[in-house]
Amino acid sequence: MPRISGPVPSAAPSMLDEIRAGLSRSPKEIPPKYFYDHRGSELFERITELIEYYPTRTEREILEAWIPDRIPGLDVRALVELGAGSGEKTRVILDAMLAAHSPIVYVPIDVSAEFLKASAARLRVEYPGLKVLPIVADLADPLVLPRELPGPHLFAFLGSTIGNFRPKKAAALLGRIRAAMSSEDFFLLGVDLRKDVAVLEAAYNDAEGVTAEFNRNVLRVLNRTLGADFDLDAFRHRAVYHTGAHRIEMYLDSTREQNVTIPGIGVVRFRRDEPLRTEISCKYDRESVAALCSAAGLHLAEWKTDAKEWFALALAESRP
Image 1 (cartoon, one colour):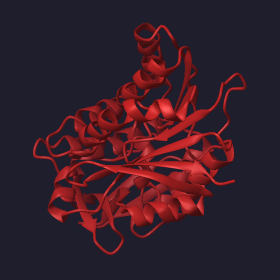
Image 2: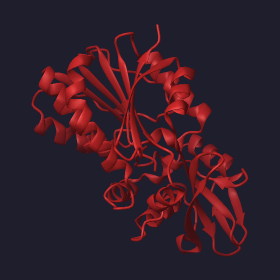
Image 3: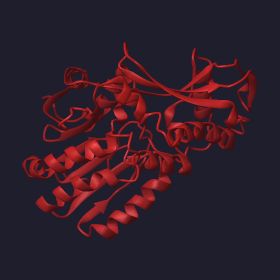
Image 4: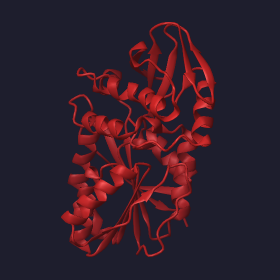
């Protein structure tokens, strides 16, 4: 499940280009960052509370068990978090950092200006010793940090959001993080691990239908932002695990033959049962995470999992 939260940017040519390119592929696809207008962000927060969706609570369990004892040894003075969202999962790290040093600086990075503003306001009230410097940016953008940021830094990319990137793009993203790191900095990565297919598929096909509503919200975003005329009721949610690629693939299947008009793109035809891919979520093991880090110039130094080995936190260092 992506945590590149919204609201979505205005209908700039780059967005049109991305949507046009995605709908020209086979299968047709839409970048998952467009899930996240305000409604999409709220739906995702509901997903994280579902019994089937284990990643959020499992990651938090690992953070709570490990981070308070580990942070003092890292001696970090600033936390830079990519895909920060509401910032709820970050409090364990902030608490540990403030217990070791005060004041500290928190730099949440997200495409959601609205969520960032609200989160920063809450954190400033809750943590008097915390300086919050939010940055509105897409994860595809170069990583540019505030000049006044004290070091060493802890970079964090939590929530298994790295899974929404194919391996080459994931390595490129970690490479951009590595380029912003000094030899004294650390990188904390949250990854969803490979496991029983039934457990994985249930996490993306919840009984309440919240994920289905979240999935169709991307069509609502395109209708509002681009003036498209998608009929949300004419698309059916589906999420399946691709064993060979080690990833969940989430789709909206067309329930009938239909034409959709998108200004600036034209008429897009869908066959009955034709899939529209809206997300991938790659699953990892320790070996594949180590390889991903190595490709980005990072060294996997520490690895922590829950008791079931469903989720992991990886702590990496920049290579000299």
